[in-house]
Length: 510
Image 1 (spheres, rainbow, N blue to C red):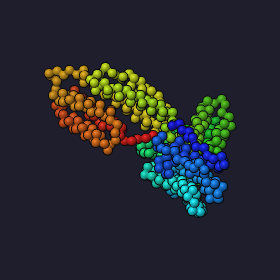
Image 2: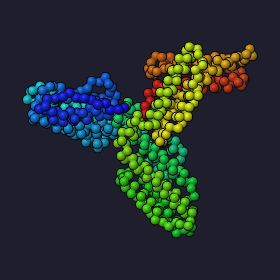
Image 3: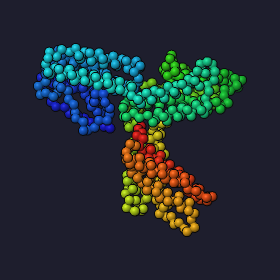
Image 4: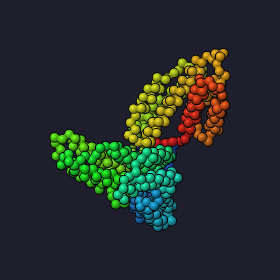
Protein backbone atom coordinates (compact mmCIF):
# COMPACT_ATOMS: atom_id res chain seq x y z
CA UNK A 1 0.00 0.00 0.00
CA UNK A 2 1.56 3.32 -0.99
CA UNK A 3 2.33 5.67 1.82
CA UNK A 4 0.04 8.69 1.85
CA UNK A 5 1.53 12.11 2.36
CA UNK A 6 -0.14 14.35 4.92
CA UNK A 7 0.07 18.09 4.92
CA UNK A 8 0.32 20.08 8.12
CA UNK A 9 -1.02 23.57 8.83
CA UNK A 10 1.39 26.45 9.02
CA UNK A 11 2.50 27.79 12.37
CA UNK A 12 3.64 31.17 13.55
CA UNK A 13 7.05 32.21 12.28
CA UNK A 14 8.38 32.71 15.78
CA UNK A 15 8.06 29.01 16.63
CA UNK A 16 8.38 27.42 13.21
CA UNK A 17 11.62 25.61 13.92
CA UNK A 18 10.51 24.08 17.26
CA UNK A 19 7.08 23.13 15.97
CA UNK A 20 8.57 21.49 12.89
CA UNK A 21 10.95 19.50 15.07
CA UNK A 22 8.06 18.26 17.24
CA UNK A 23 5.93 17.50 14.19
CA UNK A 24 8.72 15.35 12.77
CA UNK A 25 8.99 13.44 16.03
CA UNK A 26 5.29 12.66 16.20
CA UNK A 27 5.25 12.04 12.46
CA UNK A 28 7.47 9.00 12.98
CA UNK A 29 4.70 7.33 14.96
CA UNK A 30 1.88 8.67 12.79
CA UNK A 31 3.42 7.53 9.53
CA UNK A 32 4.69 4.19 10.80
CA UNK A 33 3.63 1.58 8.22
CA UNK A 34 1.66 4.30 6.44
CA UNK A 35 -0.97 4.70 9.19
CA UNK A 36 -1.40 6.98 12.19
CA UNK A 37 -0.41 5.46 15.50
CA UNK A 38 -3.58 4.39 17.27
CA UNK A 39 -2.43 4.08 20.86
CA UNK A 40 -1.71 0.37 20.89
CA UNK A 41 -4.55 -0.93 18.73
CA UNK A 42 -4.04 -2.63 15.41
CA UNK A 43 -1.51 -0.49 13.62
CA UNK A 44 -1.96 -1.31 9.97
CA UNK A 45 -5.73 -1.53 9.66
CA UNK A 46 -6.31 2.18 9.57
CA UNK A 47 -8.13 3.75 6.66
CA UNK A 48 -8.73 7.03 4.94
CA UNK A 49 -11.70 7.70 7.17
CA UNK A 50 -9.42 8.12 10.18
CA UNK A 51 -8.96 11.74 11.09
CA UNK A 52 -5.45 13.06 11.14
CA UNK A 53 -4.24 13.74 14.64
CA UNK A 54 -2.20 16.82 15.25
CA UNK A 55 0.28 17.63 17.90
CA UNK A 56 -1.17 20.07 20.41
CA UNK A 57 1.43 22.66 19.44
CA UNK A 58 -0.04 22.66 15.90
CA UNK A 59 -3.65 22.98 16.97
CA UNK A 60 -3.12 26.60 17.92
CA UNK A 61 -2.35 29.53 15.69
CA UNK A 62 -0.28 30.93 18.58
CA UNK A 63 1.44 27.91 20.20
CA UNK A 64 2.66 27.96 23.74
CA UNK A 65 6.23 29.16 24.23
CA UNK A 66 8.41 26.31 22.95
CA UNK A 67 11.32 27.52 25.06
CA UNK A 68 9.47 26.89 28.32
CA UNK A 69 11.45 24.33 30.41
CA UNK A 70 8.43 22.01 30.70
CA UNK A 71 7.84 22.08 26.93
CA UNK A 72 11.53 21.52 26.20
CA UNK A 73 11.49 18.46 28.47
CA UNK A 74 8.42 17.10 26.69
CA UNK A 75 10.20 17.58 23.36
CA UNK A 76 13.10 15.48 24.65
CA UNK A 77 10.72 12.74 25.78
CA UNK A 78 9.00 12.79 22.40
CA UNK A 79 12.33 12.33 20.62
CA UNK A 80 12.99 9.24 22.73
CA UNK A 81 9.47 7.97 22.06
CA UNK A 82 10.03 8.39 18.32
CA UNK A 83 13.24 6.37 18.63
CA UNK A 84 11.58 3.55 20.58
CA UNK A 85 8.35 3.50 18.55
CA UNK A 86 9.62 1.52 15.53
CA UNK A 87 11.34 -0.95 17.85
CA UNK A 88 8.11 -1.55 19.77
CA UNK A 89 6.00 -1.82 16.67
CA UNK A 90 8.21 -4.53 15.13
CA UNK A 91 9.08 -6.43 18.31
CA UNK A 92 8.01 -10.04 17.76
CA UNK A 93 9.18 -11.77 20.93
CA UNK A 94 7.70 -12.69 24.29
CA UNK A 95 7.59 -11.02 27.69
CA UNK A 96 10.60 -12.94 28.98
CA UNK A 97 12.81 -11.77 26.09
CA UNK A 98 15.65 -9.40 26.87
CA UNK A 99 14.49 -6.84 24.30
CA UNK A 100 10.97 -6.82 25.74
CA UNK A 101 12.29 -6.05 29.22
CA UNK A 102 14.54 -3.34 27.83
CA UNK A 103 11.72 -1.66 25.91
CA UNK A 104 9.35 -1.95 28.85
CA UNK A 105 11.96 -0.46 31.16
CA UNK A 106 12.70 2.47 28.82
CA UNK A 107 9.02 3.27 28.24
CA UNK A 108 8.24 3.08 31.97
CA UNK A 109 11.10 5.47 32.63
CA UNK A 110 9.74 7.91 30.05
CA UNK A 111 6.27 7.67 31.55
CA UNK A 112 7.65 8.57 34.98
CA UNK A 113 9.60 11.48 33.49
CA UNK A 114 6.48 12.80 31.80
CA UNK A 115 4.58 12.52 35.06
CA UNK A 116 7.27 14.59 36.79
CA UNK A 117 7.03 17.51 34.34
CA UNK A 118 5.84 20.61 36.21
CA UNK A 119 2.98 22.16 34.23
CA UNK A 120 2.52 25.03 36.73
CA UNK A 121 -1.22 24.46 36.49
CA UNK A 122 -1.31 25.88 32.93
CA UNK A 123 -3.83 24.14 30.60
CA UNK A 124 -1.52 24.28 27.55
CA UNK A 125 1.27 22.47 29.37
CA UNK A 126 -1.16 20.02 30.95
CA UNK A 127 -2.54 19.14 27.52
CA UNK A 128 0.91 18.61 26.06
CA UNK A 129 1.94 16.43 29.00
CA UNK A 130 -1.26 14.40 28.74
CA UNK A 131 -0.69 13.69 25.06
CA UNK A 132 2.93 12.72 25.63
CA UNK A 133 1.82 10.31 28.37
CA UNK A 134 -0.81 8.82 26.03
CA UNK A 135 1.82 8.13 23.38
CA UNK A 136 4.05 6.31 25.87
CA UNK A 137 1.13 4.38 27.37
CA UNK A 138 -0.01 3.41 23.86
CA UNK A 139 3.39 1.93 23.05
CA UNK A 140 3.49 0.06 26.36
CA UNK A 141 0.04 -1.36 25.69
CA UNK A 142 0.92 -2.34 22.13
CA UNK A 143 4.12 -4.02 23.31
CA UNK A 144 2.28 -6.10 25.90
CA UNK A 145 -0.67 -6.96 23.67
CA UNK A 146 1.51 -8.48 20.97
CA UNK A 147 3.82 -10.34 23.34
CA UNK A 148 0.82 -11.95 25.10
CA UNK A 149 -1.49 -12.32 22.09
CA UNK A 150 -3.06 -15.82 21.80
CA UNK A 151 -1.64 -16.24 18.29
CA UNK A 152 1.83 -15.40 19.58
CA UNK A 153 1.43 -18.12 22.20
CA UNK A 154 0.40 -20.60 19.50
CA UNK A 155 3.49 -19.70 17.44
CA UNK A 156 5.67 -20.28 20.49
CA UNK A 157 3.99 -23.61 21.31
CA UNK A 158 4.55 -24.87 17.76
CA UNK A 159 8.16 -23.67 17.86
CA UNK A 160 8.73 -25.48 21.18
CA UNK A 161 7.27 -28.68 19.71
CA UNK A 162 9.58 -28.38 16.70
CA UNK A 163 12.60 -27.82 18.95
CA UNK A 164 11.67 -30.86 21.02
CA UNK A 165 11.51 -33.10 17.94
CA UNK A 166 14.76 -31.81 16.47
CA UNK A 167 16.60 -31.97 19.79
CA UNK A 168 15.41 -35.49 20.56
CA UNK A 169 16.12 -37.03 17.14
CA UNK A 170 18.99 -34.95 15.70
CA UNK A 171 20.87 -32.63 18.05
CA UNK A 172 21.06 -34.74 21.23
CA UNK A 173 22.26 -37.94 19.48
CA UNK A 174 25.01 -36.03 17.65
CA UNK A 175 26.19 -34.32 20.83
CA UNK A 176 26.51 -37.69 22.52
CA UNK A 177 28.52 -39.04 19.60
CA UNK A 178 25.66 -41.05 18.14
CA UNK A 179 23.84 -40.90 14.80
CA UNK A 180 20.87 -38.65 14.13
CA UNK A 181 17.61 -40.52 13.62
CA UNK A 182 16.24 -39.05 10.39
CA UNK A 183 13.20 -40.90 9.13
CA UNK A 184 9.90 -40.31 7.37
CA UNK A 185 8.11 -39.82 10.70
CA UNK A 186 10.35 -36.84 11.56
CA UNK A 187 9.96 -35.32 8.09
CA UNK A 188 6.17 -35.71 8.24
CA UNK A 189 5.98 -34.31 11.79
CA UNK A 190 7.95 -31.20 10.78
CA UNK A 191 5.72 -30.71 7.73
CA UNK A 192 2.61 -30.85 9.93
CA UNK A 193 4.10 -28.14 12.15
CA UNK A 194 4.85 -25.99 9.10
CA UNK A 195 1.25 -26.29 7.92
CA UNK A 196 -0.06 -25.43 11.38
CA UNK A 197 2.15 -22.34 11.48
CA UNK A 198 0.79 -21.15 8.14
CA UNK A 199 -2.72 -21.32 9.62
CA UNK A 200 -1.93 -19.04 12.57
CA UNK A 201 -3.96 -15.83 12.30
CA UNK A 202 -2.02 -12.61 12.77
CA UNK A 203 -4.92 -10.14 12.45
CA UNK A 204 -2.61 -8.04 10.31
CA UNK A 205 -0.37 -7.23 13.28
CA UNK A 206 3.21 -6.64 12.17
CA UNK A 207 4.85 -8.28 15.24
CA UNK A 208 2.74 -11.43 14.81
CA UNK A 209 3.50 -11.61 11.11
CA UNK A 210 7.17 -11.25 11.90
CA UNK A 211 7.08 -13.95 14.60
CA UNK A 212 5.28 -16.38 12.29
CA UNK A 213 7.69 -15.65 9.46
CA UNK A 214 10.78 -16.20 11.61
CA UNK A 215 9.41 -19.50 12.95
CA UNK A 216 8.52 -20.70 9.45
CA UNK A 217 11.85 -19.77 7.84
CA UNK A 218 13.82 -21.61 10.48
CA UNK A 219 11.65 -24.70 10.34
CA UNK A 220 11.75 -24.76 6.53
CA UNK A 221 15.54 -24.35 6.65
CA UNK A 222 15.78 -27.37 8.96
CA UNK A 223 13.63 -29.30 6.49
CA UNK A 224 16.06 -28.43 3.69
CA UNK A 225 19.06 -29.51 5.75
CA UNK A 226 17.36 -32.78 6.70
CA UNK A 227 16.34 -33.51 3.12
CA UNK A 228 19.91 -32.86 1.98
CA UNK A 229 21.23 -35.22 4.63
CA UNK A 230 18.71 -37.90 3.66
CA UNK A 231 20.03 -37.79 0.09
CA UNK A 232 23.62 -37.78 1.38
CA UNK A 233 23.05 -41.10 3.16
CA UNK A 234 22.44 -42.79 -0.20
CA UNK A 235 25.80 -41.69 -1.66
CA UNK A 236 28.71 -44.12 -1.78
CA UNK A 237 30.93 -41.68 0.09
CA UNK A 238 33.53 -41.16 1.39
CA UNK A 239 35.93 -42.64 -1.13
CA UNK A 240 38.80 -44.88 -0.16
CA UNK A 241 41.95 -43.04 0.88
CA UNK A 242 44.01 -45.33 -1.38
CA UNK A 243 42.48 -43.79 -4.50
CA UNK A 244 44.33 -40.48 -4.24
CA UNK A 245 46.33 -38.65 -1.60
CA UNK A 246 43.76 -35.80 -1.58
CA UNK A 247 40.91 -38.17 -0.70
CA UNK A 248 41.93 -38.41 2.97
CA UNK A 249 41.74 -34.65 3.34
CA UNK A 250 38.35 -34.52 1.59
CA UNK A 251 37.14 -37.29 3.88
CA UNK A 252 38.28 -35.26 6.88
CA UNK A 253 36.32 -32.27 5.57
CA UNK A 254 33.29 -34.51 5.12
CA UNK A 255 33.41 -35.37 8.81
CA UNK A 256 33.58 -31.66 9.68
CA UNK A 257 30.63 -30.94 7.37
CA UNK A 258 28.56 -33.58 9.15
CA UNK A 259 29.33 -31.92 12.50
CA UNK A 260 28.57 -28.47 11.03
CA UNK A 261 25.23 -29.75 9.78
CA UNK A 262 24.21 -30.69 13.29
CA UNK A 263 25.45 -27.32 14.59
CA UNK A 264 23.40 -25.53 11.94
CA UNK A 265 20.22 -27.38 12.87
CA UNK A 266 20.83 -26.54 16.52
CA UNK A 267 21.37 -22.87 15.63
CA UNK A 268 18.23 -22.67 13.50
CA UNK A 269 16.10 -24.14 16.26
CA UNK A 270 17.66 -22.11 19.06
CA UNK A 271 19.29 -25.15 20.64
CA UNK A 272 22.87 -23.87 20.58
CA UNK A 273 23.89 -21.58 23.40
CA UNK A 274 27.50 -21.03 22.38
CA UNK A 275 27.74 -21.08 18.59
CA UNK A 276 26.65 -18.23 16.35
CA UNK A 277 25.80 -18.05 12.66
CA UNK A 278 28.88 -15.90 12.02
CA UNK A 279 31.16 -18.42 13.75
CA UNK A 280 29.73 -21.37 11.82
CA UNK A 281 29.96 -19.39 8.58
CA UNK A 282 33.68 -18.85 9.15
CA UNK A 283 34.20 -22.56 9.80
CA UNK A 284 32.38 -23.56 6.60
CA UNK A 285 34.26 -20.94 4.57
CA UNK A 286 37.57 -22.30 5.87
CA UNK A 287 36.48 -25.76 4.69
CA UNK A 288 35.84 -24.36 1.22
CA UNK A 289 39.28 -22.74 1.15
CA UNK A 290 40.86 -26.04 2.22
CA UNK A 291 39.06 -27.92 -0.56
CA UNK A 292 39.95 -25.32 -3.18
CA UNK A 293 43.63 -25.71 -2.31
CA UNK A 294 43.65 -29.44 -3.09
CA UNK A 295 45.26 -30.62 -6.31
CA UNK A 296 42.82 -33.05 -7.91
CA UNK A 297 43.84 -32.49 -11.52
CA UNK A 298 43.74 -35.48 -13.78
CA UNK A 299 41.24 -37.45 -11.72
CA UNK A 300 37.56 -36.94 -12.61
CA UNK A 301 36.22 -39.07 -9.76
CA UNK A 302 38.09 -37.03 -7.14
CA UNK A 303 36.97 -33.76 -8.74
CA UNK A 304 33.35 -34.92 -8.59
CA UNK A 305 33.79 -35.98 -4.96
CA UNK A 306 35.20 -32.56 -4.02
CA UNK A 307 32.42 -30.86 -6.01
CA UNK A 308 29.74 -32.74 -4.05
CA UNK A 309 31.30 -31.76 -0.73
CA UNK A 310 31.58 -28.10 -1.82
CA UNK A 311 27.93 -28.12 -2.89
CA UNK A 312 26.94 -29.50 0.49
CA UNK A 313 28.87 -26.69 2.22
CA UNK A 314 27.17 -24.11 0.00
CA UNK A 315 23.82 -25.64 0.90
CA UNK A 316 24.56 -25.08 4.59
CA UNK A 317 25.91 -21.56 4.09
CA UNK A 318 22.71 -20.34 2.41
CA UNK A 319 20.81 -20.87 5.66
CA UNK A 320 23.16 -18.75 7.77
CA UNK A 321 21.66 -15.37 6.84
CA UNK A 322 18.52 -15.90 8.92
CA UNK A 323 19.66 -13.74 11.85
CA UNK A 324 18.87 -10.42 10.15
CA UNK A 325 16.47 -11.23 7.34
CA UNK A 326 13.42 -11.14 9.60
CA UNK A 327 13.99 -7.41 10.06
CA UNK A 328 13.11 -6.71 6.42
CA UNK A 329 9.40 -5.88 6.27
CA UNK A 330 9.13 -7.19 2.73
CA UNK A 331 10.07 -10.63 3.99
CA UNK A 332 7.26 -11.16 6.47
CA UNK A 333 4.66 -8.75 5.09
CA UNK A 334 3.70 -10.91 2.12
CA UNK A 335 1.28 -8.26 0.89
CA UNK A 336 4.40 -6.73 -0.69
CA UNK A 337 5.57 -10.03 -2.20
CA UNK A 338 5.48 -10.19 -6.01
CA UNK A 339 4.25 -13.80 -6.05
CA UNK A 340 1.40 -12.94 -3.68
CA UNK A 341 0.49 -9.96 -5.84
CA UNK A 342 0.43 -12.26 -8.85
CA UNK A 343 -1.82 -14.72 -7.03
CA UNK A 344 -4.14 -11.92 -5.90
CA UNK A 345 -4.37 -10.69 -9.49
CA UNK A 346 -5.48 -14.17 -10.59
CA UNK A 347 -8.01 -14.33 -7.75
CA UNK A 348 -9.48 -10.99 -8.81
CA UNK A 349 -9.82 -12.32 -12.36
CA UNK A 350 -11.48 -15.50 -11.08
CA UNK A 351 -13.89 -13.44 -8.98
CA UNK A 352 -14.90 -11.43 -12.06
CA UNK A 353 -15.47 -14.60 -14.11
CA UNK A 354 -17.38 -16.24 -11.25
CA UNK A 355 -19.77 -13.29 -11.02
CA UNK A 356 -20.40 -13.55 -14.75
CA UNK A 357 -21.03 -17.31 -14.52
CA UNK A 358 -23.53 -16.94 -11.68
CA UNK A 359 -25.28 -14.03 -13.38
CA UNK A 360 -25.79 -15.96 -16.63
CA UNK A 361 -26.83 -19.15 -14.80
CA UNK A 362 -29.45 -17.18 -12.84
CA UNK A 363 -30.95 -16.15 -16.19
CA UNK A 364 -30.84 -19.74 -17.48
CA UNK A 365 -28.13 -18.84 -20.01
CA UNK A 366 -25.51 -21.59 -20.32
CA UNK A 367 -23.68 -19.99 -23.24
CA UNK A 368 -21.20 -18.17 -20.99
CA UNK A 369 -18.49 -20.79 -20.50
CA UNK A 370 -15.11 -19.21 -19.80
CA UNK A 371 -13.60 -22.63 -19.16
CA UNK A 372 -10.59 -22.07 -21.42
CA UNK A 373 -9.87 -18.82 -19.63
CA UNK A 374 -10.11 -20.55 -16.26
CA UNK A 375 -7.75 -23.30 -17.44
CA UNK A 376 -5.23 -20.67 -18.51
CA UNK A 377 -5.41 -19.20 -15.00
CA UNK A 378 -4.55 -22.62 -13.58
CA UNK A 379 -1.51 -22.71 -15.82
CA UNK A 380 -0.58 -19.22 -14.67
CA UNK A 381 -0.82 -20.24 -11.00
CA UNK A 382 1.31 -23.31 -11.64
CA UNK A 383 4.09 -21.01 -12.84
CA UNK A 384 4.04 -18.74 -9.77
CA UNK A 385 7.31 -18.92 -7.87
CA UNK A 386 6.63 -19.80 -4.22
CA UNK A 387 10.31 -19.64 -3.22
CA UNK A 388 9.61 -22.62 -0.91
CA UNK A 389 7.57 -20.29 1.30
CA UNK A 390 4.73 -22.33 2.86
CA UNK A 391 2.46 -19.28 3.13
CA UNK A 392 2.85 -18.51 -0.57
CA UNK A 393 2.28 -22.18 -1.38
CA UNK A 394 -0.92 -22.13 0.67
CA UNK A 395 -2.08 -18.92 -1.01
CA UNK A 396 -1.50 -20.50 -4.41
CA UNK A 397 -3.30 -23.70 -3.40
CA UNK A 398 -6.34 -21.71 -2.33
CA UNK A 399 -6.37 -19.79 -5.58
CA UNK A 400 -6.22 -23.10 -7.47
CA UNK A 401 -9.20 -24.39 -5.46
CA UNK A 402 -11.18 -21.27 -6.39
CA UNK A 403 -10.51 -21.82 -10.09
CA UNK A 404 -11.32 -25.53 -9.89
CA UNK A 405 -14.59 -24.79 -8.07
CA UNK A 406 -15.74 -22.60 -10.96
CA UNK A 407 -14.70 -25.21 -13.54
CA UNK A 408 -16.50 -28.09 -11.78
CA UNK A 409 -19.63 -25.93 -11.46
CA UNK A 410 -19.64 -25.33 -15.22
CA UNK A 411 -18.99 -29.02 -15.94
CA UNK A 412 -21.88 -30.19 -13.77
CA UNK A 413 -24.28 -27.61 -15.22
CA UNK A 414 -23.38 -28.77 -18.71
CA UNK A 415 -23.77 -32.44 -17.75
CA UNK A 416 -27.19 -31.76 -16.24
CA UNK A 417 -28.28 -29.89 -19.38
CA UNK A 418 -27.14 -32.75 -21.66
CA UNK A 419 -28.65 -35.47 -19.52
CA UNK A 420 -31.42 -37.46 -21.24
CA UNK A 421 -32.48 -40.31 -18.95
CA UNK A 422 -34.10 -43.30 -20.62
CA UNK A 423 -36.99 -45.42 -19.33
CA UNK A 424 -34.58 -48.21 -18.46
CA UNK A 425 -32.44 -46.07 -16.15
CA UNK A 426 -31.83 -47.68 -12.79
CA UNK A 427 -33.87 -45.96 -10.02
CA UNK A 428 -30.79 -45.63 -7.80
CA UNK A 429 -28.89 -44.01 -10.66
CA UNK A 430 -31.73 -41.54 -11.17
CA UNK A 431 -31.67 -40.75 -7.42
CA UNK A 432 -27.96 -39.91 -7.62
CA UNK A 433 -28.59 -37.48 -10.49
CA UNK A 434 -31.38 -35.83 -8.54
CA UNK A 435 -28.93 -35.20 -5.69
CA UNK A 436 -26.40 -33.84 -8.20
CA UNK A 437 -29.02 -31.39 -9.44
CA UNK A 438 -29.54 -30.17 -5.86
CA UNK A 439 -25.80 -29.97 -5.32
CA UNK A 440 -25.42 -27.82 -8.42
CA UNK A 441 -27.93 -25.31 -7.04
CA UNK A 442 -26.21 -25.32 -3.66
CA UNK A 443 -22.79 -24.89 -5.25
CA UNK A 444 -24.06 -21.75 -6.98
CA UNK A 445 -24.97 -20.36 -3.56
CA UNK A 446 -21.59 -21.38 -2.15
CA UNK A 447 -19.75 -19.70 -5.03
CA UNK A 448 -21.61 -16.49 -4.33
CA UNK A 449 -21.35 -16.70 -0.54
CA UNK A 450 -19.35 -13.89 1.01
CA UNK A 451 -20.14 -14.15 4.72
CA UNK A 452 -18.72 -15.69 7.88
CA UNK A 453 -19.26 -18.93 9.74
CA UNK A 454 -21.39 -17.23 12.33
CA UNK A 455 -23.86 -16.13 9.65
CA UNK A 456 -27.20 -17.91 9.49
CA UNK A 457 -26.84 -18.38 5.72
CA UNK A 458 -23.59 -20.28 6.27
CA UNK A 459 -25.24 -22.64 8.75
CA UNK A 460 -28.14 -23.22 6.36
CA UNK A 461 -25.79 -24.02 3.47
CA UNK A 462 -23.76 -26.39 5.62
CA UNK A 463 -26.90 -28.17 6.79
CA UNK A 464 -28.30 -28.51 3.27
CA UNK A 465 -25.03 -29.92 1.92
CA UNK A 466 -24.88 -32.40 4.79
CA UNK A 467 -28.43 -33.53 3.98
CA UNK A 468 -27.38 -34.22 0.39
CA UNK A 469 -24.55 -36.40 1.67
CA UNK A 470 -27.04 -38.31 3.80
CA UNK A 471 -29.28 -38.80 0.76
CA UNK A 472 -26.36 -40.23 -1.18
CA UNK A 473 -25.52 -42.50 1.72
CA UNK A 474 -29.09 -43.82 1.62
CA UNK A 475 -28.91 -44.70 -2.09
CA UNK A 476 -28.73 -48.48 -2.59
CA UNK A 477 -26.94 -49.28 -5.88
CA UNK A 478 -28.38 -52.83 -5.80
CA UNK A 479 -25.30 -54.15 -7.55
CA UNK A 480 -25.43 -51.62 -10.40
CA UNK A 481 -21.81 -50.65 -11.16
CA UNK A 482 -22.62 -47.37 -12.91
CA UNK A 483 -24.65 -46.28 -9.88
CA UNK A 484 -21.76 -47.14 -7.55
CA UNK A 485 -19.38 -45.01 -9.60
CA UNK A 486 -21.87 -42.14 -9.88
CA UNK A 487 -22.60 -42.17 -6.15
CA UNK A 488 -18.90 -42.19 -5.27
CA UNK A 489 -18.27 -39.20 -7.54
CA UNK A 490 -21.30 -37.36 -6.14
CA UNK A 491 -20.10 -37.90 -2.56
CA UNK A 492 -16.67 -36.55 -3.47
CA UNK A 493 -18.29 -33.59 -5.22
CA UNK A 494 -20.44 -32.76 -2.17
CA UNK A 495 -17.43 -33.01 0.15
CA UNK A 496 -15.45 -30.70 -2.14
CA UNK A 497 -18.24 -28.11 -1.95
CA UNK A 498 -18.23 -28.33 1.85
CA UNK A 499 -14.44 -28.00 1.93
CA UNK A 500 -14.64 -25.00 -0.39
CA UNK A 501 -17.23 -23.37 1.85
CA UNK A 502 -14.97 -23.97 4.87
CA UNK A 503 -12.00 -22.50 3.01
CA UNK A 504 -13.94 -19.37 2.08
CA UNK A 505 -14.85 -18.75 5.71
CA UNK A 506 -11.76 -19.77 7.70
CA UNK A 507 -10.36 -16.21 7.57
CA UNK A 508 -6.92 -17.44 6.53
CA UNK A 509 -4.30 -14.78 5.89
CA UNK A 510 -0.82 -14.79 4.48
